[in-house]
Length: 228
Length: 300
Image (cartoon, each protein chain N blue to C red):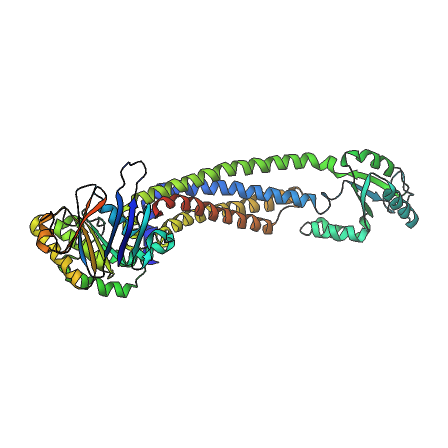
């Protein structure tokens, strides 16, 4: 599903590469935690999968396609198969929860009747059916993240990238989000989650890929945050 | 498409004052551009089909004309006509010789002055046979003029450039002034459009960011901006077209034509051509700055 082969990424003007010779494979349906200190390369890893950046050397293959060599006009299609959630939720402030989720379908040209059918269903799944008309500022952090998650998965992507999704949430709320992510993973979506949240990683006991200084230093099935 | 149209309307409202500034600039600059096009067409009409092809015109005698080389009451004879042609063709300063009979001259007159009341008063017999001459070196016209003026059967020798060049100089000066001013204003309009779109895209950067993340195509992302600037440009073009039509009706049809009937004035078909050009310029001027301004937000 996602394969990194000797991937190095150097940003202009920086001495140390953000990623250095990273090689790993993430299979269909896996749930992988990407851990490491700030600046270890976690966000860069996710950006390369999404083709928001290109590797300086090495190969990144997503769903059988070498994303580094992909022409610009093919990238929107790649991204329709990948959902993303962020620490800061990134909901559109002037739009309600329903509109935020529907937006993701509108801009890729889905017909109105499909949007009207699918959005309420997915809002129900994430527990926001009764808050569909609320604006983001009227929601709690957890509710905002649920809305963001709904927007990320409403199009049924095969991959979900989560960049510190519980970073702005309290522990109880974080548990709720992780349950949702687990459910999404059980439904078949591959999840790659970058996180500093050791509690979440230790509780879920999934595969852990650790980065440090841009290098892959640990790849452990049913791992925990720190070394055991 | 509905989403794009909604975004266009909201963008027009959000950037109303900037769009109004662009509209006014486009209106003025396109009007000047259109005027430059009309002046060009007017100059071409005045020149007619001969001005650029020849330098000197020889008018031959008719029973009604008088001249040193004309026999009163008689037209130029065939023999005289043949001698004139032979002399001209033998002259090394003459590059080409064209002959037109009275009937041919009258037919051309009828085409040029189709709308003028003068035509009704003229007949073919009122015209003169002509020899039109193209010179090897236009500067050496005096040699040919002097020789032709002495030939039997030649009533008059005319160098049109003497009379019309000062007028054309004035018209060309006016044309370049209009085109130059319109060029500067069109550049200002293009920069305004670019700025306006850049500001609009910056204001919508969160939405654009989400659209790129979820896989919206670049065309879909750019479409509202392209439509917004196109609408404003076309509105400016519409106002410019209306202004040109007003100038044609009130300045040319109602004032200039009745006052100067000897002239061939531009008609509505010429105004139509100018309108087509200025709409094309408006479209190009809205598309290009928009594509450049939105490029930064669409880089993958």
